[in-house]
Image 1 (cartoon, rainbow, N blue to C red):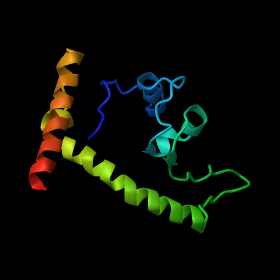
Image 2 (image 1 turned 90 degrees about the vertical axis):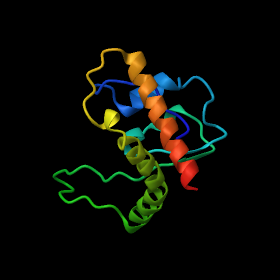
Image 3 (image 1 turned 180 degrees about the horizontal axis):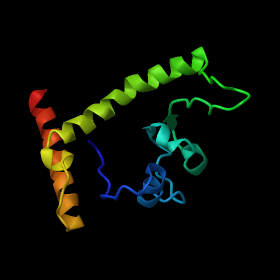
Image 4 (image 1 turned 180 degrees about the vertical axis):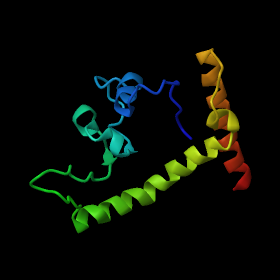
Length: 132
């Protein structure tokens, strides 16, 4: 786990959090290969990337297209993206082993919550180091 953002409540969407953490007017990702999920569809319009990896979204259902499907090429691309994103999902799963992150937290201090998330991320990284 290389980066953990500040804690945001559930009313914030992924793209909004990205804009707050990494303002689009600065050059954040131009030297990086970045992997996003479908919550970040319009990110290529805001930022410059060395390489952007993002899946394909199925078109919305309409009267003209009642059964929208992905093309075989789009399905193949999504499989390739999924094979790389699985490592991110496993990292999230390693964090959820810590019950303080999985269960409802009734702490009122956001600074303490952020410290707990950072400590759990450090412990998850350390356990990976010990296992390898």
